[in-house]
Image (cartoon, rainbow, N blue to C red; front, side, top):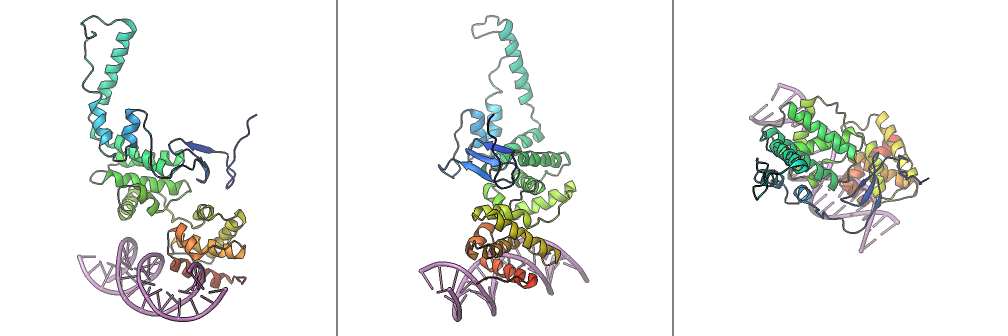
Length: 303
DNA sequence: AAGACGAAAGTGGTTGA
DNA sequence: TCAACAACTTTCGTCTT
């Protein structure tokens, strides 16, 4: 029997392999188990025209252009070859099937094109962020719903796709920050935020603000902290939440501060600078939150 | 030399009249 | 639509290790 791999973080055996990155990722928490340390920059190989269209970094309009360019010009309606001879049997059937596809592809429905482009963009971003498949699918589903409810018109596709991805990450319990989405997107953090709110309202999404606890594992991994420390951080956070001192505060700052405190308590010290870095907040914010936590929870820090 | 700390002024987004 | 407001950032000087 083949030994099955398990995520060391959450114990899930649902692992997913991203061939474009050469990485093995946990579908549950997003932890990267294995990666080929070659080059972290976005660089893909394309094995055929379709992949090339999807993966080209200059990307945007290529898909749409190729869409028609390759297919609409070269299939004749007659069952004859270039010499004028009848094409028979299996080949004729094949030709007819090709024609059928050709007709389908040529549907000029704007919505279809819109969707095709949106999904390829989604693909690109999800791959670049090493997100598990189910997140990508959730995002695609959100986007389709948005299209059906006519929420897209007049808005940038890229913005709405980004918003759908952001929402999907949150719904699947592995939230990414707006900044992280913006990095692989072509629109700004601000626009994504706006689009997201619009999308959430339009689809009636149940959007509870992200809990800081959800960030602990990922930030903790990036800081190479032990499970004990991460658990400690979570515990600190849930106490803080209970005391109601977290409302209105940025979840990322809180997660960062909790990890910092937990690091001190567990003898795995990280500098405020390091913690702030992975959480995408400033040292000052880490400090402020950490002061609060220590005060309100009466935590004694060992010297 | 690097980390931790905190004051002060500035920024972008939400809220309420 | 505007102004007040809270959270967060930026910047910078000081203290500690």
